[in-house]
Length: 579
Ligand code: ATP
Ligand code: MG
Image: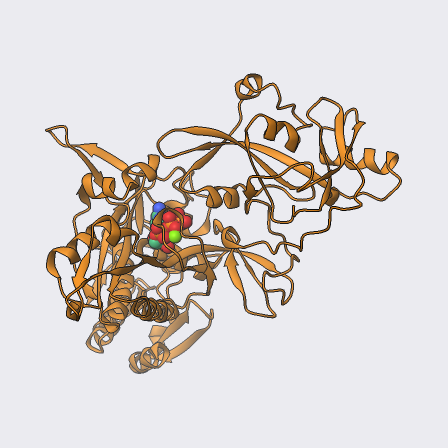
């Protein structure tokens, strides 16, 4: 196929869009791949759609290769199945809800576990039918709180979601492993740099789960790795190694001190070093952070979170630990309604005597002694011992994970980096099949409850992720597997010979099986070169000044190399470069 730029529905922009912060967003808009319609809602223009379709095809080929079968479910869905699993409530404000003309509740699907479980229940009834893996590549809807970076986090986006159904846990493990390998092949074919990390399961429920994160400084996920052991996890999923409990016998009694003006950990540590005859660090203090936990049904509860004073509470870790509930900060009104919460001096004792749920960092084990609030302005406890003077209601993973922290497997220090989630695989188990009693008859005639996995790839997000990882200072750069065209031929001279030469080369390249973008516009060579660089087709063939001597120039967008080639060797050179 030859597409002429003079005909293509495309206008490139000289300036970055005002709302764009990350490079992929700027470039995809400037290069005319996508256009914004509303926050998190984008149109695909011809070039963008071609990239999207190519990514879809890579995903489709690799899913088909593991025996998954493609189907397509509606995006417009009834409420009842999501009511049965409680996700109508649990999804909270993230769900797009609507009513039909009869006033019946409906939703736009954010993910389809319920419907796939029901679909399999509808068709299959024997253990002989299983395992089965079904998938779709479909538009999903989520009313994201912070739609971001163009198509990177949309409110409407394309996902490949697949679901496996097995009669045994071993079967589920096999389906999971097959997906894991298929995802590796997909992301390898797309040329991405990514890591597979342990993940939490969030709103999905279930147990084992891993995420595929594309490495990127603009990623919203933080992951940690231990070079020594290969351990890798989303920080949300890092489990803090708890130290051993210590004996309480022989520990000094807790004592209240006047500590005026010590609302912050820094001022408290200064006070302690000036007034206690030992060296104190922030890690000796216990900081109590108050949050409001908002259940999906709207019920709220005040929660106290105790962490060593040298660490911040990581709100994303806290949120992941409390999911599907959300968290909010306490308002002045909340403090006024609970006068025992004395800002800067909150301690475990007042929380416990006022029946506020109190969860602590796993490092706060029985027998550890802390400097912490005494619940009165200007007063702190010294030597308040966990398991003796206060007993938390449990532990919570909320403290920040830092570079240099010991890996949970004890093998070495953790290093952190940022990534963009491009895929997520879950062993769901029976959460959804229980909700709908999805059973098949076993060999012995007894019903077996089916076990499920669910697996997602962010297909439209991948367009932005590839752009993000591959772009350079002057524009987009597409790996050949997903580039909208194989070759971009630029006619860079006004004379008739160059025009004819460009046309002829385009036709030859097309006959050799390449998709060609031909810049046959009347614009100046400078404008054409800039556009070619911006659009990001990996090979650019320039028919310009050299054509008078029968030579074209081949530019490689990835290496930056430019070579002069006789006109009759252009096709052979392109063939060679593409392989
Ligand atoms: P995130 O943590 O980025 O919000 P998620 O964990 O909610 O993603 P999943 O439910 O695991 O997402 O969905 C499967 C895949 O769909 C994700 O790995 C991601 O690549 C993609 N995806 C999820 N939300 C969006 C979105 N708002 N826009 C584009 N792609 C998305
Ligand atoms: Mg996910």
